[in-house]
Image 1 (tube, rainbow, N blue to C red):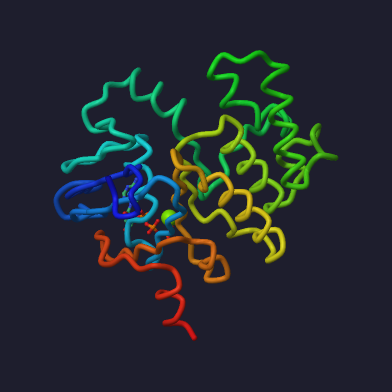
Image 2 (image 1 turned 90 degrees about the vertical axis):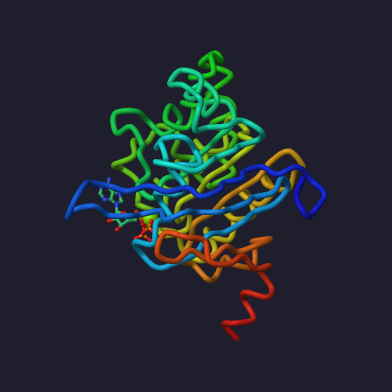
Length: 241
Ligand SMILES: Nc1ncnc2c1ncn2[C@@H]1O[C@H](COP(=O)(O)OP(=O)(O)OP(=O)(O)O)[C@@H](O)[C@H]1O
Ligand SMILES: [Mg+2]
């Protein structure tokens, strides 16, 4: 149980990750202790290279930590095996990557349907849900377009629709507003925030964009491979005025 009286969504203790060996070794994570609560949007900020993307990969189970513990909704990800980990991720986690990772030969409706198809839903059900979300992010007129026919910001919005389409309990976003103008970024954050504001859900957002800090419930500061502090967002923003 966390401090807001709701269950904890994600808890990590002492997470470490080193890339490479010997003289080329990069210690990306040096013992990350972190907690995200159900019902909140928590942002992670910190300088380029401090380990944010690596940490997100560990908590969504796409990368194994070298040591430490990672608990997501009561499931220990470190000890979950290949197939069960993939299944857990498919059902519970949505991600928006720093690179959008769209399939170039599929149109955006097909791209946004992927998580539901992977869960075994029919093509029609998946595409109906995807069309609804693509419309919400302002791409309802472009369902037939392929990613290369869209701007960076439009591709980002397809990635956002794909991340939300299966209503994941944990949504993980790496710089979701990096290629969006202020007004579109605002709309997208409203959509993400609405997804977090349910007692069994949680949204974790890595960002450099101070314009969106006001959407956060709490802000965790990373530096050099560790989380060095967690603030409520009003307290954190006060440092900037
Ligand atoms: N696959 C990899 N192989 C080797 N080193 C890596 C790999 N991925 C990340 N690193 C290194 O780990 C460190 C942390 O990288 P990471 O991508 O997590 O940083 P970040 O905080 O997300 O930075 P940014 O804000 O620029 O996206 C960096 O020094 C990076 O060069
Ligand atoms: Mg990164």
